Length: 339
Image (cartoon, rainbow, N blue to C red; front, side, top):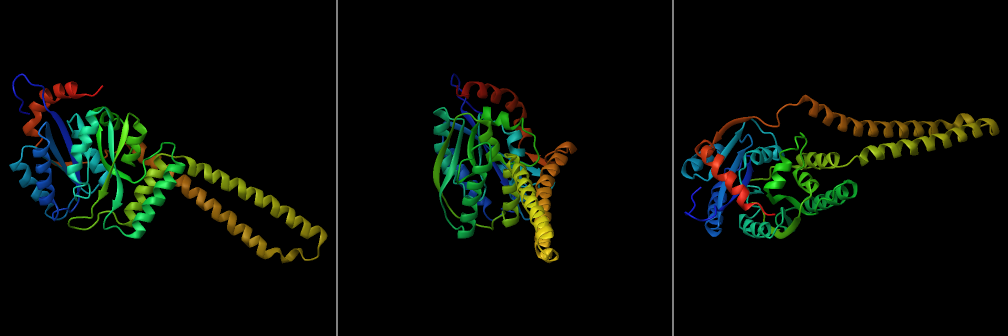
């Protein structure tokens, strides 16, 4: 990292961009990242792209860009592991005193990184973007996102900022905490909220995708929501206990009803309908409770297997900076850490 003699090293900012079939938008992304580095002259940048098993020309395009630009680094995963895992791979290899997470589809405007850096220098350890508006998103997606935020904040033991995604800047202290959290079912915005430290929001208008299609269909959105809910709350288990107690109370009432019909009426055989309703209700509650318990057990099973979070097939750009990273970046971390 070039510095002038007698001057403090420039802040190194790592920008992490997970990609999956983003060939159409990458040229514009690279252009705007370059414009960001020109505008923010008091910082050095490293742009860490993670190819999460793309099947189009994304990898070839990034390989060519990495050969032209020493700031660009590429991690190619062996298959598609999902956005949260791909982002984690970038976090593990980031060297910056501050690390920025953002999508490469330009729905997270790179120009806002300048404001995030300014807040970081004011003493904040996390600067997260909050979406004041969402261009190009359907009413259904906006409504479900709002509902998810309300549900998870009601159930979670850790408040998670509403209308926020993964677009955020984190100080080295927060990054080091994240690297100590090895869970498989990752919900990064919840993990960052759990870490604490000084956090602040940066409202922005989220634009629509410049090109390509969304990589988060309803199925993946539901899976991410489930990961967020079960990773930061045990209240679903408590709800199953409540349902069990409620069912037991209704069963006691049913027993009294059956005894009354048997002892004081002659129509006690006619309780078949009520009996079937009771059986179906109790069976449904039991299945729901077992499903909730099964989700938690499945996560325990995944954790005890101790498989690696991701597998790297190829890395480009890191080897050129190995010696410099070992010396200069460690010095920079010490000199740029905000007390």
